[in-house]
Length: 278
Ligand SMILES: C[S@@+](CC[C@H](N)C(=O)[O-])C[C@H]1O[C@@H](n2cnc3c(N)ncnc32)[C@H](O)[C@@H]1O
Image (cartoon, rainbow, N blue to C red; front, side):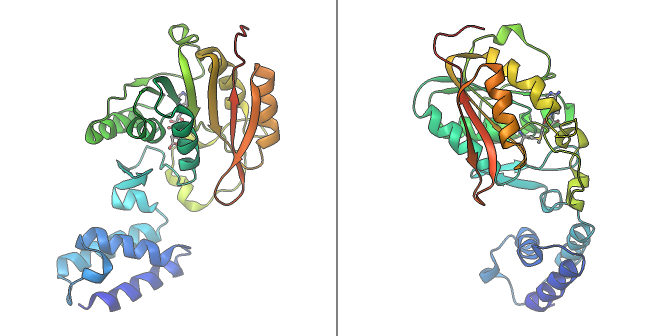
């Protein structure tokens, strides 16, 4: 079968299913199956490949995320495994990774990633800094296994600890130079069908504003940081003001908001005051 006519058919199938990124997703599925970029596709596609492409398109048409269909995802230039039970890291989280990497620079630094999921943030920081010693924490057993597998396949030494981020760990008191987190923070609202495939505990932050989890987490982060240490956390674009207040109430200084690439306020960053003990 001619690849371009099959390609056009499959783009239409995804568009009919309401997938906004129909063309890009179809192309990714073709390229993964044929192991070649579009300009290298053969004149004819083998029947087995046609069957595989159609099966993957059908999964995507049922609104399964592209990352699950491909079994992989990319974050900050790293290839990570993807599948059911583990949150699919979103491209906008790269802004938080960049903030952390720039904040650390080439200095030695103890870094903690709370609610690490696939390990994306922790691994991006470890892969792109020289002196960072990164530890990751995650509650879900499936996500811990995925994060450990990702660390291993990338050859990065990032211990992934299974635990509840809302329970204070006294061994971490004043131990970290930087804490990052993309915790559950989604407020109650209707979500795109793809989000049905993310584990619910990765999404919902609790309470009317989605910030119950964050309210529990931020004071613990304050205690984990050394004086002068910094923290950065992702949030919903409706939560900027409330989360800055949560950070100030916990004792943080230099509290500000960073926007994502679409100019939406999505990340709070702050610093534990130098020389202050609470
Ligand atoms: C929004 S996802 C983010 C995952 C990852 N940081 C990322 O950016 O792709 C939130 C993660 O928090 C984890 N989580 C939920 N409750 C937790 C808790 N009490 N302690 C630790 N991790 C938790 C979920 O399992 C999920 O992996």
